[in-house]
Image 1 (cartoon, rainbow, N blue to C red):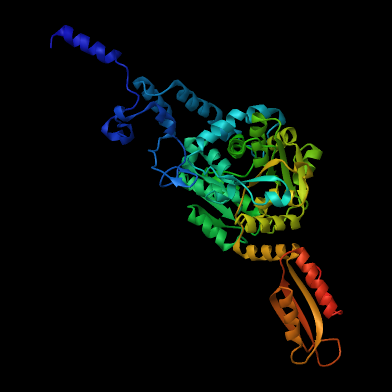
Image 2: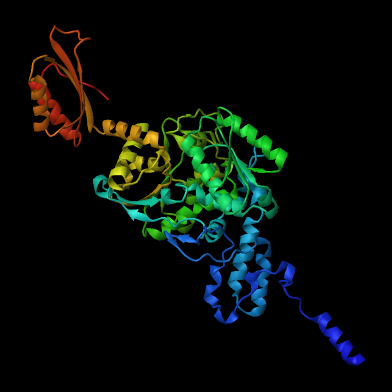
Length: 530
């Protein structure tokens, strides 16, 4: 090769457009090896730099082929290479850059205990665009749960549609916010790991999705946590440490470990990424149920689902009524709205039945959204929650906890009479009821619903007297659950027996009929009050 040819060749090498992806042997990635003839332009949205299940993205229970994973640090380069090849539309480039712009700094926006999020930053922290971006980002990692017409509609004269978020993998809607929060963390923090300190649905969601994203995750639980919940969390892939007798002890230990090992300490607060992920529930409900009149969400201490979904629904249709429901025993949200700031010193129950219903952890951003966008907040009794759990089990075959049943409890208890004849969607957001509580809750609910009753009476200790009592119960079609006889410690005359009987009836009317028949035959019979 002569000198002129060498000069032209060197200039061509110098001016050649560099390739976006290096294909050296030491860093070669087989994902970049493609057949351009097989790529279609409409396939562009299928590239999800998201969390996917082990066997593929999950949508409504269907498992498909898992797309190749894309390193988030190389996502921009991948899009630029496709643009050079002419295979990517301009709108996809905008989605990629928009997601990075809105969500890339979510870690810095997570409110810490030392600095509270100011109310003036509401517009900066969460917008409808944030929720839309979150829906796109988490679509491969969570279920798009059904929102179905309920058989309870005729009974309560309301067109009820149940959004069954308890069908998520961990049984809770918290997965949406957690997945979006974790995928929004910087890469260096994802490599270092995260740590949480509670046995709540939030911690279970963090344990599962962090493990699926290959993020080191540590969960600090109190020693009083049930063994079943500890086992479940470990099965999700988290390192579980039992420490302290209370949640506060576990939190202090987790903060110390986070500081010593550079873990990110996560707790359920109102960060922009977390609220945006929860707000995707509102988007789906609006899409799945046309002509909605009202939507009912659980409120309680952690009102992120209520606040985030209200932001989405009010943007799509300002005429939809958004209603929050909390427990009368823990009216945290109502007190905070009256005070104008989050109530810090609010008593909460440590009983596992209440779960996240009694917790308090929302911040100024959630309170600002709730006060501005939520139309009404009502409170229900514990008895109403138990009846709601019973109705969902009977009519929907759904086993839910207090947080999942509290929204429907407002309709059952008659707290929302203005919704009669209207189309209402209710979020059933959690189904993590522990087994030892299930039997206790259902038994108590049957008693409250006047379907299990107990009475006692005194009979002569003669053959055939108890048989006559059983004949009367059979004639009235009452099912005997338990029958006890007491002969020694009776305060009546000698040679008598005190019989205590527990029976099951069909409904309140059937119970009244049985009581009338018993009093006619045995006037001294005593009916046990609830």
